[in-house]
Image (tube, rainbow, N blue to C red; front, side, top):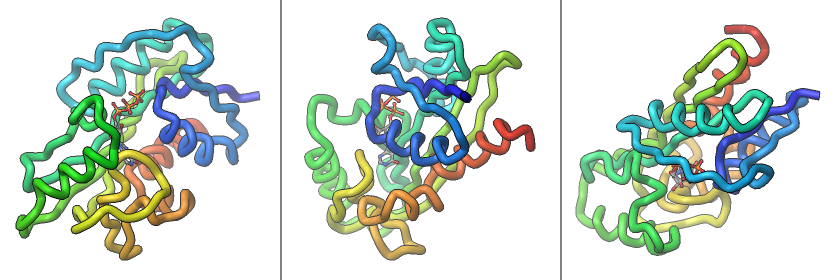
Length: 192
Ligand code: ITT
């Protein structure tokens, strides 16, 4: 049995990683199985933060550990919320966060944005990094109930839908996490 620990407490990420890794025969574990641990994500890039998370958990469990640090960069807002995506407007739910971002984007002609995902993997050979990016636009309104976080306001142009209106399969086929995970899988299969 191949076991892999996803160093995350984000249920949306766990769901997506299960859908990507279980078909390849991995048993996916997550932080709910370990004693609670506070991780100080004080890096200045997605990659640094992913490594901080994966390394802190690698010390605590005897399996391959992966962690992702991800977020939404909006060009017209100086790439906010960026690496602070999870902490942006902390204490408020995503329907409020998305409402505020849509409000801040009112009248902006440049609506380009991207989701970025850096995955760090720690195994017996050391640390490895994989990055994926999904380019898109900030929609003019929130739409869709799938996915999590900022998905309802992120327009994926090739589908003409927000990423919260995509099925898990559609999202995985184009998403930052899907792209980074395919790189990760190539590594796990020994192709890279
Ligand atoms: P962990 O650190 O425990 O993994 P987190 O939610 O704090 O969980 P991050 O620090 O990586 O994770 O922050 C990522 C945030 O970026 C996440 O909470 C969402 O707000 C946003 N985000 C990342 N990927 C996303 C996606 O696929 N769809 C929507 N929002 C996403």
